[in-house]
Structure formats: structure tokens, C-alpha cells
Image (tube, rainbow, N blue to C red; front, top):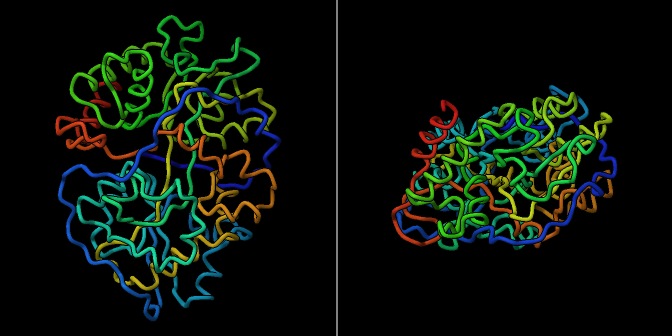
Length: 399
């Protein structure tokens, strides 16, 4: 999954007012217990002397060292404090992260839910000793022990930040204001040809989420746990949607531009994209629809063969310090995992806009989680795994 998000700072212009309260609710998950065996990877018992270096694999904007933007640098202070010289490599897809982890090439990765569980079951990452994480107590409890960062109560990382996939529209063209994902799936939409959708196999879950509400007879309980019938229905919905789409996006800038110039009037988006569009004067609004939403939650994880495990733990402690979390959250455009960071943001309203401390909002989101044949909702072993989702998504794109 490609996720080239915000790589410049923005001023949030009262966008909190754009968010409309949504009715309905969904369970965002819980620790995974699929019945699949997890490889026995040793867990650290202490943080020893730093090895003098660390290799970081991260999303763009997560490990800024001042080279691209001189005033944006939380890596150099980390090096000065710990003596761990950082080698940062940016990854643009979750599949890229999956392939590179578990090789001993990297020490830590900022994994999203569509790759983290795959890494755990492939033995690519190590269980994390939360007693060694100095900021773990300040991570909101509702972000811990979730399906994308733990297995049977054992954490495999420390939460970093999160956000929802929202429904966005041009308020000058789309009336009345939408409150349902039906707006982007309606085959008779008056906005056909001007609707944008996210380009990823994980977008199948967005279709499944909508079917949970509109076709309850399908029995979908978790949009990432689909049997063949449920999966086929989701694929068929996406094929029908493709007929009314203006296009797909994976780079945030493309989405922003299409909404600003009026090429798209409706579609999936992120809060930060709405912020940028509003800052540019575009009449854009977003909502968490009544069906709930999918979303992303990132986790710092340690490579199972990390050559510098002590510096890896030093990094996880550094990057979740409240002042550093505040910097990353504002630069990147997300809710910080460490809620004490909310008192450190330069924009006092940042955490309100991104709902950082709002558990009720968090629980309306079905966060990206890697589909498995052993159903994540515990319903059986007849669910389609991620490889089938990739194949299914290709059939949608080629339809």
C-alpha cells in the first residue's frame, strides 16, 4: 500500500468545525487469536549499552533528520542523546516494509496494520517488552492490545499515531451534505465521473464495511474477515463503483489537487487532505459516515534479527516522548499515540481536530488489519487471506 502523506507543516484553520458527528458504531478490534502459530522469537529483557547505530525503516515524515527541511529534525537530537547514529530509509508501501523486515537489514519499522500482522506471523518482528518502554503508560489504553499490534495479549510494538479514512466532498457542489458511504457507491449518483477512491487491496474492507450495514444477510462481522461469499459481494460492489469513479488515488497530493480543481466532488480522504484544501481556499468538508470507517494505526516494531536492539528500544522511547510525538503528529497530520503530546503541540487544537483522546471516535474506525485464512473475528478458518485480496483488487482495477 502506498502512503506518501504530508511532508510539510500546515496550519489547521479551524477544521474541527468541518467534522460532523456520526451515529452508529463498530468494534475496532481486539487482540488477534487466529489459531495460527506465531514463531517463537526472543523478547528483550533489558536495554543494554547502545550499539552506536540504528537502521530505521519508516514512512515519509516519521523520521525527519533536517536534511530535506532544516527546521524539521528529531533524529539529530536522538543521535546526540543516545549515541545511536541513525540510518533512515523511507518506504512507500507496506509490501516493501514486509519484504525488508526480518532480514537483519533494519532494526525498527513504522508498520501499518496491513503489514504488521503479516510480519508477526512470518516471524519477522519480535515481541516487545513494554516494561522497557518509558512512555507506554501514556499511550491511550484503547490503542493497546489491538488486532494489528498484538497477538493473544502480547504486544509487538508501541503505537505511534492513527487516523480515519473519511468521506470528503465539495460543499459548493454536493448537496445535501452526505452522511453515508452510499454517496460513493450509488450506481445512479449524480456525481458519477467525479468520485475518487483509495487505490489499495485494503479498500476491499471499505466495501465490506458498507455491506455490513446495507446487506446484513451477508453476515459480515469484521470487514477484514470475509468468507468467499462476503468477499465476492465486496468485489462486485467495487466493480460497480468503478463505473462511476473519476479515478483512484494513493498519493495525498493527487487527491488534494483533484478536489481543489473540482475534478472530484466526492471520495475517500484523510483529515490532513481536507486541512490542506481548506487552507488553499477550497470549499471542502469531511465526515466520519454513519456506517463508521476504516483507518490506519501505525506501530513501531523491532526486527526479529535486529543488529542493534538496544538502540532500537532507545528509538521507540525517543519517538514516543510527548514533545517528539507532538512534532511528528503536526508535521505528518495524525493523532499522536501518546496523548500527553496534546499539551505540547504548537496548535492547541490539533488533538481536537484529529480526535486523539476520543475513544468513542476511535471505536467507530475499523483499522487496517492483515486478512488471514483463520478469520480475525474467530468465526472459522474459511476467510480469504491477503494474497486473495491482492488478486481480487487486480480484478477490480482491470474490470
